[in-house]
Structure formats: structure tokens, C-alpha cells
Length: 108
Image (cartoon, rainbow, N blue to C red; front, top):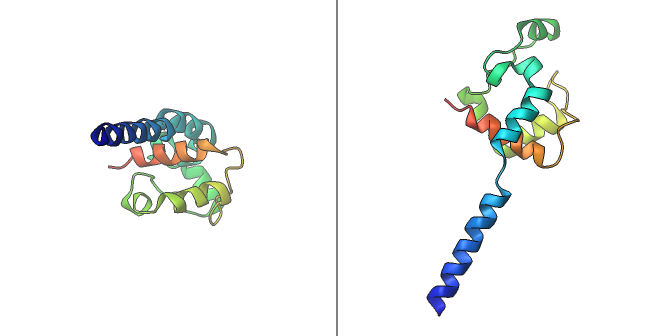
């Protein structure tokens, strides 16, 4: 009986974890609407005109410098902005986690 309870709890935790997991596909859609204009397709081709007009280097999101940041750091950049990058005010709730998951999927 004890083994059955442990198995049930483990399965429940697994299913809950999957249900609560961020949605990479939705993250890609949100990224396409809110981030792509500056960061480029797949975060790999930053918009040179935007970078030049703001006088900044827009990072390639698959680079180690970005991928090495914590999820919390990436969420802060999305929600509060950083430097000349404004906050993505239209990215809220679970969409923030979805965008982070999408950015993580870009890792080389």
C-alpha cells in the first residue's frame, strides 16, 4: 500500500509539472508579436536599423551571455526592460514564462 501511495504521488507530481510547464510554442508566438521586430527571427538576427538608431548592440538570444542568465533575470528584462530596451508591457502572466522557455529553446 505504501508503494502504491508513493507511486501515485510521484505520478501526480509529474502530471502537475507537465501541466504547469511553460509553453515554448506560445512563447514563440508571443516573441513573434512582441520581440521579433528588434531581436529578429529566432532571436538570431537583431535589427541593425533599430540597434543603430538607439546606439546599442542587440544581443543574439542563443549566445552564451544570454543563455547563462537565470530565468528570473530574463523575466526581469522582459517585464522591466534593461538599458534602452523598454519593458514588454504587453507580455504578461504565463506568457512571460512562455517567452523565457522559447528563449531557452534557442540555445546553441
